Image (tube, rainbow, N blue to C red; front, top):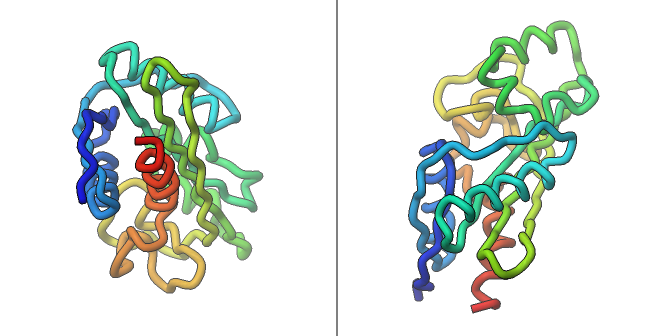
Length: 186
């Protein structure tokens, strides 16, 4: 049964929205897109970034909102790009990450996703998930963002080419946590 209430996913990234909409719909929750650019503070904490974005989103829409922030943490690079993943992707992209990892054998990484919910009356609620994996040796075709270079543990292909990314993506795991909480709250 679909849960009906006016809930908005706020982002300028339509790829994130489409993924979130598909995942939440399969969990029985419908969302709408409010496309806008949100304030993104510089912080070492994805939680702090997500919280600030959720408050900014609510102030613009004044309706219940969720936002998603994530980061790719590469062990051999000291967790870089981490909370700066969006900026790093926009500036050096996957090719730059691959150059940084040239001649590095240990390519362990993890993708962290943070969903933040704000309805204007309660404190911002955060839902975090982390998926371990590694950085591929080459950039695969398909996907978006870091999907072409991240191989989740237990898989031989990157997010860009696995058969069902939603089964084990960092975003899906955080959205599931949010959905379970939200449906119970309603």
